Image (cartoon, rainbow, N blue to C red; front, side, top):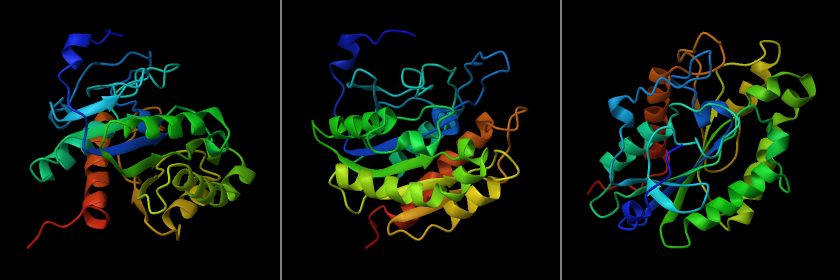
Length: 255
């Protein structure tokens, strides 16, 4: 991976609105990754870099965001296009002047079950640490975008306890970030073990927690592995997440 040029980043301004990207592989992004584990380097227009979109690197500094957003976070797998950049570009385009700098905090790691995101586990603690670091120089965390659950469709017990585990995760992250009303936009999974996928989806779609909304990925196109979203689907999902943010959480600027 190319090492960022320090001089290049020295002029970067801090983001004003910050979004945490977390979960497993479909949030980390596998769009454009071939069966031979190579990324095709195709970046759709909706995912192009923009000076007002930043990402928090694994070294905890802000840099210009570009695909693949999770390359230095989900390091054991090949990352490609995820929903983050199309989401950020849409949020930026709708922002009021002066509030257009969008900061993304990638935290997703492929193949992870929700029990690995419990308080005290490395993934959870890293997410909280990175989130806290993201606001040290200003800016405000606006929402946590969460796309995870495929790994919890493999066993009945995991699927049946998903709702309780997810509610606990939400309570914990809100407490640890001192953001009791932190908006959560979670994605209802579109793939996984057919035997238990509906149990996990039922938990996601039916969750009754304040300031938690669900975007359903069912119907979006999957790659030939029948697990990961295509690049085009990731673009579409990013727009769906942005629309959910506008509809439920973004302040209205209408007179």
